[in-house]
Amino acid sequence: MGTRIMEVRCRLIIFFHNRKGSTSQNRGIIFQTSSSMESNASGTAGKPIRCRAAVCRRAGEPLVMEEIQVEPPKAWEVRIRIVCTSICHTDVTFWKMDSAPFALFPRIFGHEAVGVVESVGEKVEEVKAGDTVLPVFWSNCEKCRDCESSRGNACSVFANQRPGSGMPRDGTTRFSGANDGEAIHHFLGVSSFCEYTVVDVAHVVKISSPIPANRACLLSCGVSTGVGGAWKVADVEPGSSVVIFGLGVVGLAVAEGARRRGASKIVGVDLNPDKFEIGKKFGITDFVNPGACGERPISEVIKEMTDGGADYSFECVGLASVMADAFNSSREGGGKTVILGVEMRGAPLSLGSYEILRGRTVVGSFFGGLKPKSDVPILAQKYLDQELNLDDFITQEVSFQDINTAFDLLLQGKSLRCIVWMDR
Ligand SMILES: [Zn+2]
Ligand SMILES: [Zn+2]
Image 1 (cartoon, rainbow, N blue to C red):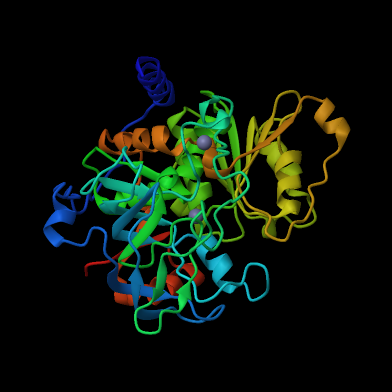
Image 2: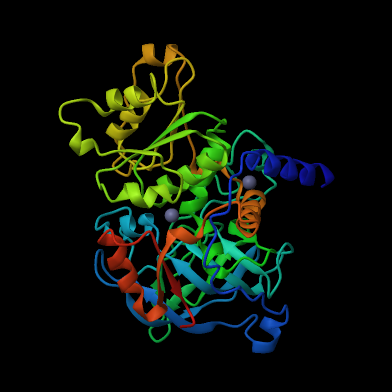
C-alpha cells in the first residue's frame, strides 16, 4: 500500500511539473457528500427502487421519460443514486445505431456521471452507502494481472464478458419497466440516464475530495480520456509541438493536458473554424481548417507549421483516414501518434512500414491510458488545486426532464458538455 501511495504522488508531481496559472472559474455548486446513513434512512437497501429513467425505445428517437424498477445490487455490485450526468458522443453513436448487434432497445444510455452510493451487494468492501462515486465504463478491478501492471490501463477481469447490454459478471439486467416488467438493457456497464443505476464495483471510482458534482461528472469519460492521452499515453515533454485532429471534448482535453505538461505549440485541426476561439481556452496556439487547405495534404501543412512534423500527434475523431493523417503529420525520428478516437466502422489503419522504420510510433488507448480508481481522483484534486481547467467544458446545464434538449445541443454542435441534473 505504501508503495502504491508513493507511486501516485510521484505521477502527480510529474504531471504538474510544468503547470501554469489557474484557469478555474465559476466553481458552481459544491457537491455535498451525503451521510453514510443515506440508505438506512431511506430504507431502500435490499429492495427494488422505482424511479425515473430516460429510456431509448428506438434508434434516433427522443428518449422517453418512464418509471422503471431498479433491482438491488447483487454480489460485487453497487447501486448508485445519480446526482448528475452528461452526454458523450458515444451515447449519440449508439443511440443512432439501428441494426444488430448494437441496436438493443429499450435501453438506458449514459456513461458520464457522478452519484452517491445507495447500497452495496455482498463482497463489496471498497465503498459504502453515502460515498461519492464516479461510475466509469472502463473496468479497473485492481487485482488482475493487467491492473497490477504499470504498462497500460487494460483490465482483464471481464475478459470473456465485456460489458454489453447487461451486468458484466452475469449478463443480466437490473432494470425493468415499473408496470409491465419488461427488461431494459444496460449500456457500457454504467447507464446513467436514470435516477438510480447498478454498476459493478470494478467500474466504480470513489471520490473523496470536495469537487463540485458537475465538474466531477466530466471526469467519467471524455475529459479524462483527453487529459490522460497527453499525460499517460503520450507523456508530452516541455517545449514540444503537438497537433490534435478533432477539437471535440476529447481533443480539447488533450490540449489542456498538453499545455499543463509544457508543450510550446499546440495545433488544433478541425473543420469548424469556431473551434479555434474555443480551443484557446484550453491551450490551442494555432489552428488549421483542413477544408481551407486546397489540394495540399494536411500533413504537409502541419509539417511546415511544426518544423518538420509534430512531436506528438493525436487523433480524436475516429476515422482511419484521419488516423493516417495524424501519423503522417508526426515527426520522423521519434514522433508519436496517439489514437483516442474509436473507428466504429472497423476500417483498417494503413501505414507505411518505411515510415515506422524512420522512428515514428503509434499507440492507442481507451480512457486516455488512465487506471480509473487511482488516476481519476488525481485529476479531481488537480481541479481543486486550480491546475486543471474543467469549467470551460460546461456549456449548458438542464434538468433531467429536459435531457432531450441536451441531446439536441450536442447534435447541433452547440454544446461541449451539457450537465443534466437529476433533482432539478
Ligand atoms: Zn464517453
Ligand atoms: Zn483488472
